[in-house]
Length: 264
Image (tube, rainbow, N blue to C red; front, side, top):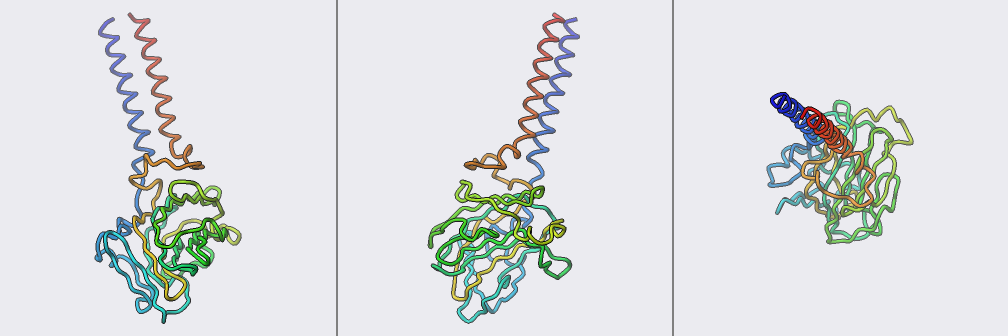
């Protein structure tokens, strides 16, 4: 009976460990940076992965893992004319980056997350329209004044996409700033089957900005597993599998303890 007790403990212990590992990896192992690290701007070579839409209208400089994107005075006041990264058709959940606007009061920094079919931009397929705009207000989608940014200061941005409700949550320096709908939600919901492109550009000629640490990820981005966000609406959802796994493990351990007690 002593041998039977140890055999039962061993089997149950293996079950608990297997369950914890399975659920841990289910939560944490599938996060993928859809840019493949090309948004870390480690050196000038990463720019070869980006398509330059209007190379004659911009200067791009990389230093200390920061990209400075400057639109010339002679360039046109035009959307989506900076650089473009095409990634696989996906439903990303997390976009993270830090940006520094260098020009006051103008539309100086834009990021859009969009959908292409072949080489054609789908007009109603944008889920994100982020801009450091007029009078130093930053816009996200239909929220024209999400927060007021400072020129010459880094701002850490994290944006969470909820594909069930078509809502984005914006976090500024780890604190929740606002929530709003996907950019084109008021138009054609059917277009939101996936996105596959990220644009960076400056709308106004004669403006400059910096960006670093850019990732867009299939779930919470790598390295952010233990980052805490204030008033995070996604925090509970992000950890539900891990919480469930620990709860089940505790129940199994309790059952094991009771069974061992009765056998002895």
